[in-house]
Length: 436
Image 1 (cartoon, rainbow, N blue to C red):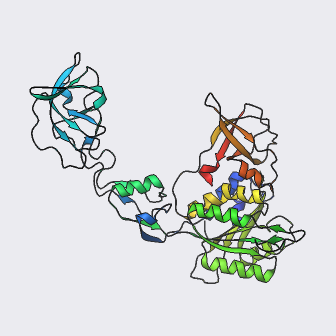
Image 2: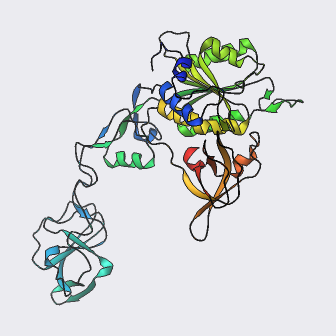
Image 3: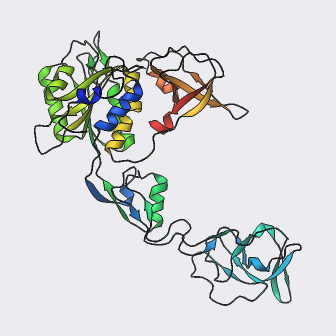
């Protein structure tokens, strides 16, 4: 995407583009083209790297595991010495403990060693038989075990050197988000720090004269600002640096100051309220004045109105700032964040991961749905006695019913061309544990 083309021109290139009834997946395609990933990088201690995004491949400085080792407690032996049709008796000549350098002495034929999980395998032994599979005894010559025929295959229960990672090979790729498993993998390589993309800075503010901050006295016609807390909480879960600008009244001077302040310090600005078609406020006008912005009525429910674009900072040395304007209704704001903002911010952060994969569950109730728009209904997924997943709605689905989001554990996704849903029909569900 070139900076010389306006966003209206870019959007118009999308097949079937209609700003008054835009399919939800088309919005995602547009945002993919709009967002420019952050490239600035920094080195941080591993303990501070949770949910950060790798700016470069992590190259393994060693083989993992660094030596052949036992996969479980048992006895290390030569697989070739096991009889195939009868039990095999082996003399126990020693013990290998985890954390020790290994067994140096030669091991006689028809002998084995007791070995603990993770202990280095003696050089000429290739198989481990679990301790519970043998019969053990002692005679005048010392300890022995008897291995039943077929108890173990040659080579079994042995972890090979480098079978997880080979020295000099990428252990993790650039763009990997460092969750618990990835952090553990880096730690297993003995690396105390990692090179990561700098943390994305995201500013947020709510708009509207009717919106009250907590602590202000209530008045007729006013509402307390819930979006500030739902949106910033979801931003914190993404691991971005949140710049909370609070509530901005529907006043041109205040809006201009807020947008300029946000553009001066943030990589992305998210607002809620003031983007509906025909609204008699100044938010949309200020967005147009300070940036290159498109306004849509998306063919989805809830969350129809949305704005997307870029703010042009007063400092020419700074790149344009991503702007995403969400609807003001609480549930609509949360749903548009989950569906559009979260993937856009992950792309901004430089992630290369796959999008969240929905579950398939059978509907426990009929749902009315007309083709031509995507609907996201709040749902509760449960597992039946037979192991199958079923989902029911939380009842009232109004875009202002925030309590329904609390009751739900996922969003039922009824796709653009999908019609009515009957009891027992399979539907897609985005689970909150994966997207919030």
